[in-house]
Image (cartoon, rainbow, N blue to C red; front, side, top):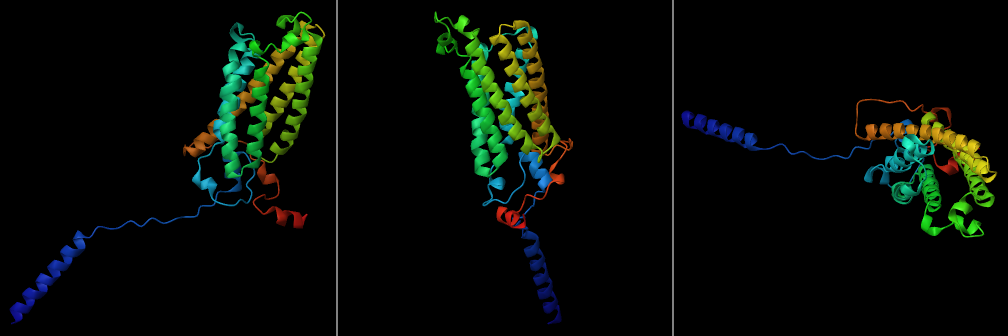
Amino acid sequence: MAAMNTETLTANAYDEVNHYASMKPELTPTVTNLTMTAEMFEKLYLTPKTPRAGDNIRRFANPTPLGFVGSFVISAMTFSMVLMGWGGAEGFSALAGMFLFVGPLLLLLTLIFEFLLGNFFSMMVCGLFCVFWLSFGVLQFPTLDLAGAYSSTGSAAEGSASHAFNAVIALYLVVWGFALVTFTIFTLKTNIVFVGMFVTVTAGAWVMSGAYWKVSSGDYGSAHQLETAAGALFFVAGSLGWYITFVIMAAEMRLSTKLPVGDLSQYWARTDRDIAVVEAEA
């Protein structure tokens, strides 16, 4: 009887071991709420971190570097090199595709997604440069014959050298310079690289405006020098844009290299609070 009980216990123990050995551990997914620091948020999206409804930041990819690829990495760099006459380059007609599709198309897509994410300043920046490349690109289409309207004979070559035509473009660039100054003020809440981009672009717009003023007065030598200087400024802006695009992509791709951007948000009051609370404290 005792032997039978021993055999029964042994069999039960053996069955229990086999039962647990056959069981596979189950992995249960859990949702972890990760809080992104204000500094990291500004570095990735180039806009201060503010309260927002929904979780679109977690649902959608970061669109900011896409707009910078279109506006600065490709468009601004190419535009600047043509202005400086590298390799004998001259004129912008061959860049019509860039003016209409590369910069504006990528910027428009970025603008839409920045809007969905609730990134106000990034959205404004993309919209600003989107319309700039479009409007300046339209001037380069010979089939539109815009310059011909400024010539008594209808000659586009004569109209493009006229005082009125160049004065109009110069005034347009002056206004753009003031718009860029406004944006530059708000970049002071982001980082030094972003500030440098807007400072050089603003200066470039005004210097290029000076080049058109010189053409309107017939001083082509000074116009060429100012055009080259504007190209150099845009080249610096494009280089900074290239750098910050790499920084954002490196962070998104979890590259171990940590590149500095000169964070300025630490010198300002916190922005990740509701605007009603900020107004009440003011």
